[in-house]
Amino acid sequence: MTKLIITILCGGAGARLWPISREHHPKPFIRLADKQSLLQKAFLRGVKLANATEVITVTNRELLFKAKAEYAEVNLGGLPTSYVLEPFGRNTAPALAIAALQAQKKYGDGAIMLALAADHLITNQDAFQSAVTEAITLAQAGKIVTFGITPTSHETGYGYIEANGNTVIQFVEKPSLTVARSYVASGNYLWNSGMFCFEVGSMLSEMRQHCPALLDAVEVCVANTLAPEQVDLPASLFVNVPDISIDYAVMEKTSQAAVVPCDIGWSDIGSWDALGSLHTADANGNTVMDGVGNVIDEEGTRNTATTLLHDTTNTYIQSQHRVVGVVGVNNLVIIDTPDALLVADRSHAQDVRHIYAKLKADDHEVHKIHRTVYRPWGTYTVLDDGNNYKMKRIEVKPGGSLSLQMHHHRSEHWIVVEGRANVINGDLNLVLNTNESTYIPAGKKHRLQNTTNSNLVLIEVQCGTYLGEDDIVRFDDLYGRVAAPVTPTEPS
Image 1 (cartoon, rainbow, N blue to C red):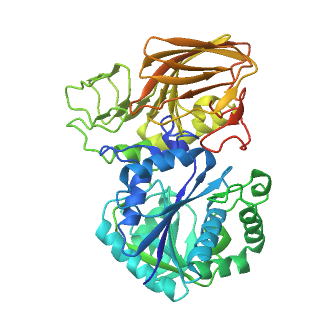
Image 2: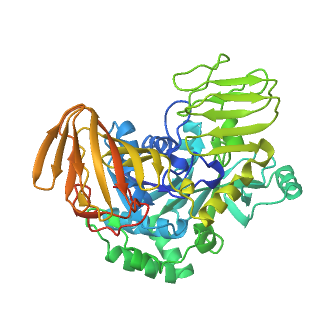
Image 3: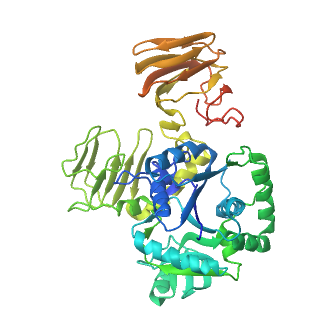
């Protein structure tokens, strides 16, 4: 039986979907109207395929626990999953090389790998299965197969493939509008989907021929993985891996490239305009969403916020918490989050990436994280911060435990508002119920645990001369973070 290894590439920042998509909460974790994230949809479309054997997910080390939580919601069949953890992004060629090495080790050269992007949408599963079946046949003949999407518009945001049947004539870059029109009119060009299918032995052989330095560097990283139970790549070695896409490294050089033309309802949802087009607009062309993907009716009411429209047309609005009034505008995208607001002309939706790039260049935290940050033990939300103080709402899931830790520069007050907390505070072991609290001076070891079957919620007030998240020393941790290098963006 053919072993089909689904490889999901879960990386990138999704800069054009800022401020919902951020470095530590990228596009694959955005939820659509049906409450499923793009990552969950990629997982489900893979595991539904015939002969799916395992899912390998390549992602950033900081996103591991989010990815596991996403899969836990939908992996009802219990298909085996494994992870390749990158300390930082190095593009698609290294990611696929590492995943191919893992598949080769487990299943041999003849295993078929299907590489999927975590942030795409495919609406026709039957057509997708047919395309994959055709791709597997080509892969078993030694081909490195990509999937070409039948164009439905003169899209300038995608690369194109000139093809004759399954034969790739050339890969071409994102074109101008005039060139895109000529491509679509010719009938010989397909959108480059960024999905691939190949025998792992064939891909590694092509890499050995066309990008040997990359493969050598990747093999060194894999041989020195930080955790035996998963491929956790050391940053000191991974920095030597070339940053290059699989298109440049292999597909544009190999004589074994093939393409499967297909019409599978594909979209990469690359901008707010594209995301807005997924939902049915009202009679005026407006779409109003809440923060978790629910389309709001004409009354506009919901639990936490209200959006009111007057003399407004062709506008996409997403708001999570506040009342939003929109008056006398046309063709806008308005995205409201607790710490950032985006207002853009829909025709310039692709240019949102420039705002993201500026924020990143300035090292502004709103390009990295939301006010609510997900951790393996639960979440924390920054409620307020100022000179020498910060206030957080901390929610610890059942069985969750923060690391045993201490801080050099800040003290903390913990006040339980829901549930029961088990606390280590220096030499004391405390049990705190609702409306009870404890004070933890700077320099004292402490730990917070939830040993109950219900969520634990508390308010944390930090006071000190320095409140950065890198002021943490871990002594013990359930989630293996003690040995990991501490960075200023790593929450406690």
